[in-house]
Length: 260
Image (cartoon, rainbow, N blue to C red; front, side, top):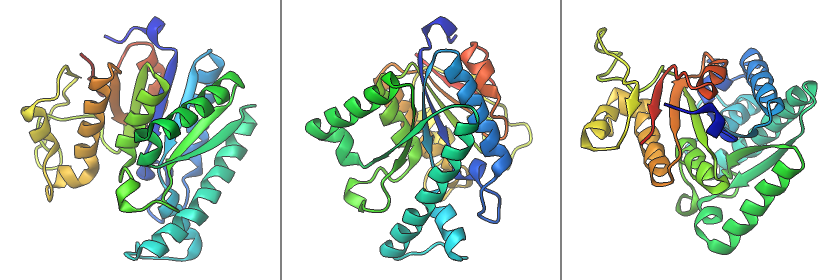
């Protein structure tokens, strides 16, 4: 069980499917709920970090792109435009709840290289001390494959370890980890608690080419492995129900809890 008294610093990861409509445009209702909930949790005295996806998708929409570009320079251009739009919206919505946000763009090098990691840690700590909410994304604009995480699930787990978080919540497009593919089996049941990552759990996530795997569960299991290595509880829950955050920090997990 999660113990509410042990949760002082929390990382929230939000995916593109929660942030945007099918049109690629921002889902302002969900963003308003997200910023309200996180602001309220901040007001409770918790440190909050938001790891956000969506820069490339939002940039594509704003630039009139209908198909995700394959060429790196166009992906980076879309990320550049989309990141501006995302931060503009986050700044506006958080300000309505008297919260200040600071942007941190990260690549893998910022985590694995000791000197750079220390500087990033110091930036996070300064933001916490000043009462701001760090908003984190991967630096798609200047990153190349060799220095990118490639997914924000893994990034969020690495950030949780970096800041010494007491909890990582990953909001997904499904309710949690199931015992089989819920899209193919109507009797699929959510696994409420995972205490170790073994081959059976990895198999449930699916491999390359499977429906569940391409849905992103593989990267979430990898994020859970990072969290286990750093003794950080992690929760997968439904991004359509952002107010689940209150239940989770109270110790009642609607979704799957990964915890030793």
